Length: 477
Image (cartoon, rainbow, N blue to C red; front, side, top):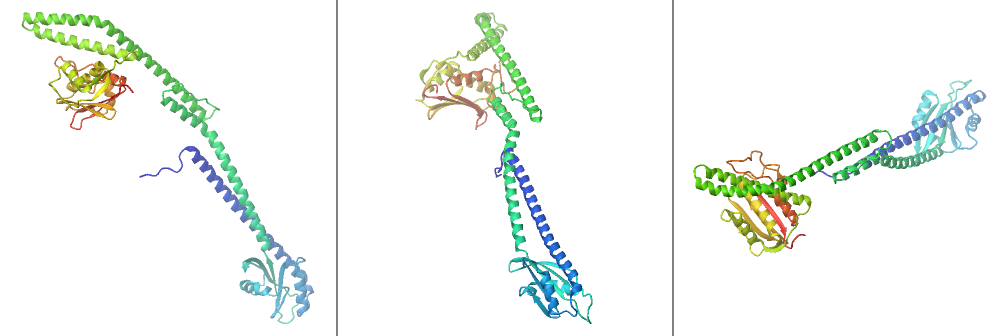
């Protein structure tokens, strides 16, 4: 199972990206500033102490007595002492050690002393003792007039770096505080600019949702001349075109419905006349014999089909005009189903499983239309045996109509209840019989909706199609 993303939406991701960039920049800048300050401070100490020691000894060397006495060594010690007395100075010569602070030589690293003895050059080293930082300088004094095998004295200066370390700590703390402030400022700016940048996107989403809900008047207000403004203008043009197209389609649909209603009304009287003539023709053709009876029956059947189509179109036009109404009666639905099957000549060809005592407030005529159209559809497009089952389910009455035919075509689903929709393009008029107008299920659905019920279509577990009608027992909800 895939986990849900931690960051959903563009704004959190933009803020995170800005924050990460600001954090990286702040950390890099802080680290760079700290290490540069550290380098400058250490170099300043090294240069100042080194230059002072070198210049002092260079100036002092010609004035030293030869051979070197304790007084000469003391002169060196005094010359290197600073007025502030922050440095520790030690002079070592032939085993003699002069220190302004006892233990100074002991604090000098052995590596530094070895390097000074070996090279005699000015040598530096940083080290820590007891958790405190020190900086040591060591060198030898060049003897101007050596006596015999006299060796130059070693001079060491040890500087306590605690003050410099405190300065570095202050620099680090200040840098961190500045970086934190800059990070907070960057995040605040990121939130502000993300809101500004994404506002057109949010407006676009809101307008798109309004359009999805049916409000085709939704429009955006382009601001500026950037890509988002172009997107808003494109959306507005698309929405306007869609609104115009849908309006045109609705106008055409309305015109088509008015035309169908007008034609149905105009055909009603001629069709009634045709039905009367067909009945007379049946009687006369039976007397004449020959092929006339077959022809007369065909004409009569087609006239009845046409009359049924006209009645269905008229009924559909009533729903479109909003004038279809219910005449509710309290009805035993089992009796109503039996009466419907009997009226349509299906009493002996339909299997029934009807629970008695299921009583509901329905319009008997419209309920009969629903059942009759479902059963007729099962015989027309399915295959026997056709079953009708009735039961109560809570506050609903449930009627199921099942057949054993090929079932509903794949992908048709609830579109089967749309007008003039037929599940198979090959359903044509066969052997002189009509394959249906495509309005029967649409009328069944409209009458179900008028009752406040539902009508669904799906596969029958035993093969074929299954239509399930649910009506509230207490009348329209």
